[in-house]
Length: 232
Length: 200
Ligand SMILES: [Zn+2]
Image (tube, rainbow over all chains, first blue to last red; front, side):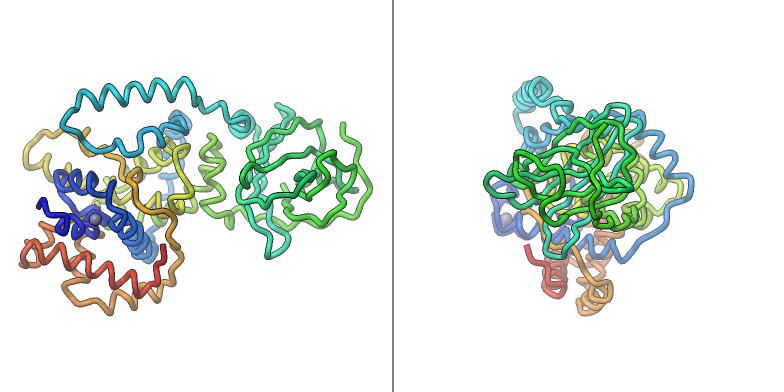
């Protein structure tokens, strides 16, 4: 079981979790440097997902409540740990060296990448957070936008992905949808399509949110068509 | 107080929370939003429970394992990387690994009384597989593709995936050489992949 050709052959069994522990570790070492197996494993996992999607089963009623109760008491991992520890999941002959390296990385990760460096996390985790998922108003519109709003904190978080570049001198604008009109809630600019921005807001009984592209100096009213909209 | 402006409002489309995809919810779950996680549970529970029940079989142990899986999904959600695949694919990979871990550790516990559970905690989702495969399949297509496999291929894949067996166990159960079991699994998956039109 040392020939590379044999290791390629294990991609199928690996993707289905059908390897013994020893063989799995050996294959994972191979996987890190074998692009062909990386592609195959990803494809085979999609096939496995398709099999599982055809095999749904309803969990018992009470399970959701016990899951959510335990989740309420469980701290989440720091976001950056993954990229740091990626590729370190296998076992090494030098266990001590790996343990020391991981410990160093973990310390580094805690110092530099605390979860609360994401400006939106405070609003999103607020007890009174209200979430609205905005829908694209036209078919061709790309991206996903979520707005999270906390009255207690007088803040609204905009979390978006896959947004188009608004163009030079332009920015995205978030609008309150009021019963008798709209009002500006603030401007934000995507970084490579992504947004994790927090805008300060005043108390306002808004019924929803809208997004347009405006000059980056701001507008009193929308000057372009609404791209995303959602109610609360 | 922001002064409202009297303008024609484009009526916002109503958002049905049930239609919010697991991928859209993940951005919020990754930031500690528990109500988004409750929605994510609804989205994923039939998929996850379906996998666990098949592999683990025992109902009360299945509940326990399902709960462990969802708590783990919550815990590691901030590390989820959308560029490496969909939430459903990520969650089903973790669920299957955990279910298989449980079955195997139960088996060896029966065999040897004690065993080190730590070693099963290797993180299946952090391996460097290629990113983002299209996960949307038609159910009828899946069944048809399965039907078109040879019997050994189909049995080997079913025993491995839903039975939680290693390919060596599959070989013993089907009374075929181990190398053959390994090859049947991979060949079968390749045929399913090609029939389903999986494109990386
Ligand atoms: Zn390979």
